[in-house]
Image 1: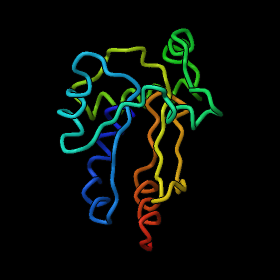
Image 2 (image 1 turned 135 degrees about the vertical axis):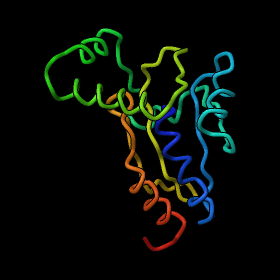
Image 3 (image 1 turned 180 degrees about the horizontal axis):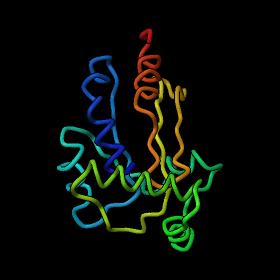
Image 4 (image 1 turned 180 degrees about the vertical axis):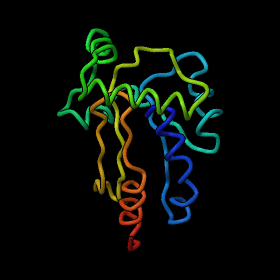
Length: 153
């Protein structure tokens, strides 16, 4: 989850916790002070867990993890056509407009997602990041979370 998406989710965290839900973040690696910086910048009162085996990331892409290449990223970033190129550029603009401190460490091309899981393990909602920086619609996340908590939306 990029810092931009985490900030949007964190803005709704109190609402979700008031419904009896637990909101956590999973990361795939710990480099230098990045987890501490992430918590300081966008997730100050939340739990962050390490998924060293990347099981969470593999859920979204058929047992493998979704990964971009540097060449593919650069082609989409500098391409003049629409489609995926436009989406990537919009995602980057949104992230830079909303977050002042970014994480530029690590490989940066593994795609993630967001899950809302009911107590007992049943998945209520899943969102897979298909383009880097793509975010789950927060209203959908909150509605799914309320359903998972047994509340009407």
